Amino acid sequence: MCANSRKLASPLTFPKRLVFLKTDRYLDTFPCILAFMRSAECLTLRIVAKIHGYLITYLEKIMDTSYKHYMKLTPNQLHTRLLKRKTPPMQAEYIKKIVAEQQAEHKSENARTIQLTRLWREFTEPLNTERENVQGMLRYKGCENDEARRDALEAYLTVLNSLKARMQNHCKQDRKTPTMIASEKDLPNDGTHWTDWIPQKIKDRVITLFQEIERKPKAKIKIPFQRFASCLIIFATFVTQHTLHIFALCI
Image (tube, rainbow, N blue to C red; front, side, top):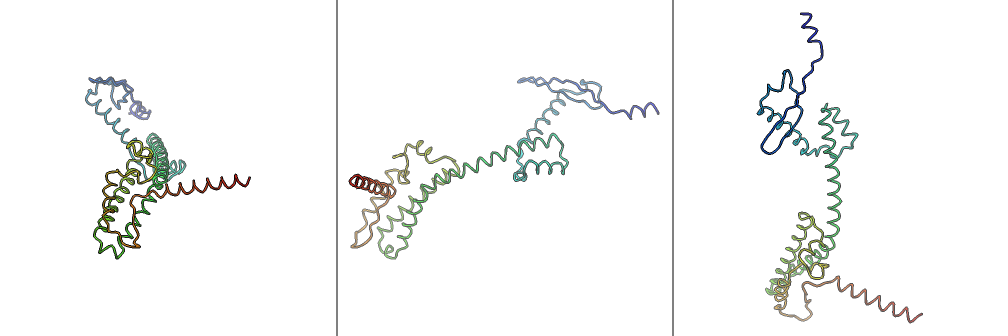
């Protein structure tokens, strides 16, 4: 009894064996601790393969897990939270690494989203202004009795809505800048204005509908696909040139 008691009182030591698992595709070598076994020959290759597969699957599961509930924590707060939950040290280190990578990726995505929103806003804001103008013209009472005018405005509004949806898709799903899309589609004028993003054949159809509208005295004539930005640039250039000319005369 005493001898057995002394044996049980001593710390348990598990023999460490080096097991070789050979398959058709690779030779994988890993140390395997065989608890309460005298030699590695006690395990068949099938059992070893299951143990190996379980370990690899478990590690991959840990690495691929999304810890969204830890995203707002600082490293110190995360360390304290894991200690309180008595998370095993190895798993805790994996979680810290994953959370740090996810936080960096989330920060990068936010910065990318802000940049894309700012770049596409330069196109969507004037486009939305044009859409609101067309919608206001459709709500005008006189438009109800003029079928040709209403058809032209509705066709124009459909084109504008379609363009807005495509631009939102490029921004939110494709995650590409206007310059990248314009280069891929080889848009005219490098896609500097929203009107450059509409194919010419569609423009021609809408313009034809507007030309069929009966002209009325003192009635406002709507011109589709106007480049207001270009007009402003021309006006600014004109003013600048004349200002420089006057300044040179004064000198």
